[in-house]
Length: 375
Image 1 (spheres, rainbow, N blue to C red):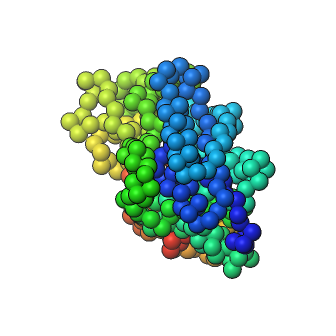
Image 2 (cartoon, one colour):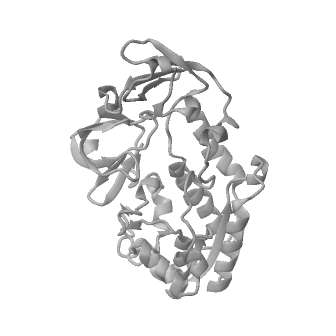
């Protein structure tokens, strides 16, 4: 999208410092900016009396008033429930570990929000407060020169706050009109800008944690149990197949998690989840955090999602490639060899064993600074 055609930008405003500074930077650059606050989770229906959404919405209104931009509130509760939360529950029910933030970004923030902003607000582009960059520039300043080339997703300057892991499935069309105004800034710089423009209360806010739009839960098992029925199963020893105890549902477990069992079966080095069998509802444990059953050096990637919209040339030809990957946002990058296995699968061979790579976990493969693929 040529920069000279971009005049109106819709910016997601959450009430936090990252989106606040993003909106300010857009206005300072001369764009007409419209703030958009998304309601994606119904805390009232959940039975929460102290609703964090109301506090965030109040802050979002204060931010937009201070900057001098309008704010629109849009409700995507139904879409979030159907597209993101039910997917989370289905996977937890079968003992798979998924990251809902990845689906939320693809389907809600860069799906429904983009659709709303383009159709209802008549915006030319959409901005968010993610720590990420693209080959088109933080403000799409290179879009004209690169309009005939695929948009590349690039790591943020702040490698600690980089969020490209969560953006690894955003569609090419959505990425092409996306701005990331703070992608070339460090987090301390973002907070300082907020203070400099008189948004001290935002600069001092604690960062939001936990599941996208749901937040961090002190007792996550109890939260999940509101939506998934308890389904008891056996806890077994992975070496002897001995029954060590019972559990109330595989949704409470993920590979590598330390668990407790009957005192007769406890190990001085602890018991850890080594495998989950969803068909029998059995949890298999090993003794000690460094047991060999916890490690893997090869795994299969099902239905890879390519940011550029097509298979890389070498892989399409069936040739192996040397890339780097990570299984979680905070994990360090590791070297790997990637080979194609059939029409829609990849085999990733890690240069080093990794601990507890859970089924359903997103695997993001990175070439240089570009996020290529996930899942």
